[in-house]
Length: 420
Image (cartoon, rainbow, N blue to C red):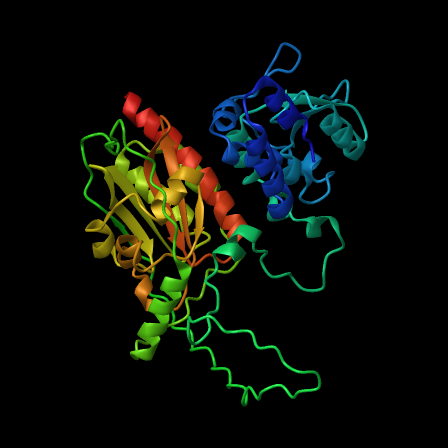
């Protein structure tokens, strides 16, 4: 894993040691590219990597178009893991040009030269452009898990779940929340009988999803409003009580409320190329919203968009297994899961039916037993200008990666519309 970029940013004071350690831990545990982990952990690093790190020796690329023939010479997943994409081979010198985040990384150049069997030249490119170019490649070049570097298994493996997702899963609670006292037993004493095991209930039969539908709120001629902020307002800190959420679900179950298990969208997923082209070509707000929703639906069962208005977020569009009227009339305050997503640039986990009640009801999650919701904000001028919300994810890693690319493209499109 190339770490020279992190060392230089530490030496320059761009990132602090805590942010660098968090990025390194995130890159190792979730197998996320280190430059993306740095951008997610540090606001200063995200702003720096938003443009190409070019100098006199290493020119910059504004757009990255991968060369598929050269990509086929690399091990599957290496381009995504190192964020290094071959773009051309000089017909005279046979030097291969690679678009990378950090063109000064000598270790990265040696690694790439070994795989292509010749000299390489590193060209600087923005982080968002590299991630967008990866989506133009076949899926076997986009995956970044270590299993891609081993022999192909006889059957496709189950989608990997990153450690932070496991931490957000609701714990299985005991029938009572009271603490269980510890009892010291004498040697040789028989353990008390725990009774016969309870038979496991069979999972409910999956209900087929309704036909996909898209609903967009009436276009607004005024620019997208930004949430009002008070000068001396303290940052919102919210701790979600998952034990309380578990008790609420158990109470509904005891009252006879029938919930079904949500069947997620399974791979293979359709390409994002046409969606990204539609976002770049969007001339008005309605076209932009429709393109973003179609992109979110490639890896999810349902998706919705929320825009800031008067200190809260209101629904502006929905697609998939969600009620359009609920989204259009929903007003979601920036607390709980929404505040967590804005502070950390991304949030994946279950919603608390009490703390996140407005968003929980708007998405209609009371119909399901337990659903993970992905919330990804799109920032314009360092403020959340749009919330991308989706659930029913068939592949968590792929869904979060695509949401990140869609939010970056949406932010660029909104900035273009505001400048007009």
